Image (cartoon, rainbow, N blue to C red; front, side, top):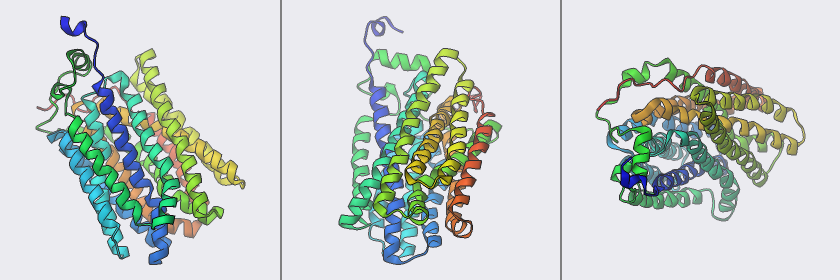
Length: 427
C-alpha cells in the first residue's frame, strides 16, 4: 500500500454496492414470490385447472433457467453495470405488459418473457460483487443478499393479498414493475464495474480491494467455457443446487396452494403462513454466511467452512419437512416448515460463495451455470407438481423434496471450494 493510502481511512463504497445488490435481490424475490398469490387469483377469473396453473408457473421458471448462462456471459464480457440495468428494464417492462393479459396464453407468454429478463439477476449481480468484495466478506455478502431476497419473499404474500383484494390480481404486476425501474436509475448513477472506475473510492479502499483479489480486468474478451463446463467440481455444484432449487420452488410458488388445498386455509391465512416460513429462511441466510466466514477466518480452510454449514442445513431440512407434514396442528406444522426453510437457507450463501471462490473473473458465467441448471430442473419439477399432487397427494410432494435434501447434503460433501475452475485467466 502506498504511503498516502496507508495514512488514509478507507472509504466503504463496496458496502454501498452490496446494499444496492441486497435491494435488487429483495425486488427480484418480490417479483417471483407474488406469482404464487396472483396466479391463483387469476385462476378464478380464467377458470383454469391446477395442471394449467402449473404450466403457467413453469413458463416463467423455464425462461428463468434457460437465460441464466447467456446473462452471465454478457456480464463477464461487457461488464455488469449496463447488462444488469438492461435486464431489469426488460423484466419490469414485461411485468407491466403482463398486467394486461386477457387469456391463459397471454399469461404464459408474458411470464416467459418476464422470466427471461429476471434470469440474469443473480448471476450478473454476483459478477457485479466479484470485483468489489474481499474474500473474507463473500459468504456474509451472499447471506445478506439472499436474506434481502427472502425478506422480499416474506413481505410479499401478505402485502399482495391486500393489493389484490383492493385492486385485483393485475395490480401487483405494474406496481412491482415500477419499483424495479426506479432501482435501475439508482444503479446506473452509482455503480461502476470496478473500484478503479468509481469516483468515490479513495486510494486506501482501492488498494485494500486490489491487494485481496488482484487487478484482473473488469471485462473478459474470452470466456473459457471448456474449462468451466469440463469441471467435475462445477457439475457437482450444479447438481447440488438443482436439489436446492427444487425444494425452494415449492415454498415460493406452491406453498400457498398447499395450505389452501390440503390444510383448508383461506387466501389471507395462506399468505400469512407463507410469509412466516420465508422469514425463517431470511434468518438462515444471514446466519449461514456469518458462520461460514467465521470458520474461514478461524481455520483458513474454505472448503471445510463451506461444507460444514451447508451439509448441516440440508440435514435440518430433510428432518423437519416430514415432521411438518405429519403434524395435524397447523401452528406446529408451520413452525416446523419454518425450521426446514431455515436449514435450507443456511446452505445458499455457501453455494453462491463457492461460485466466487472458484469462479474469479468468470464468476458470472460460473454462477450462471449453477443457477441455470438448478432452475431448469426446478422448472421441470414445477410443471409436474399439479399432476403429482392430484395423483399422489401433497404429502408425496414434500417427502420427495425431503429426500432431495439428503442428496444435496451428500453432493456438497464432494464440492471443493479451494479449486479454481479456470487455471489461467483469459484476457
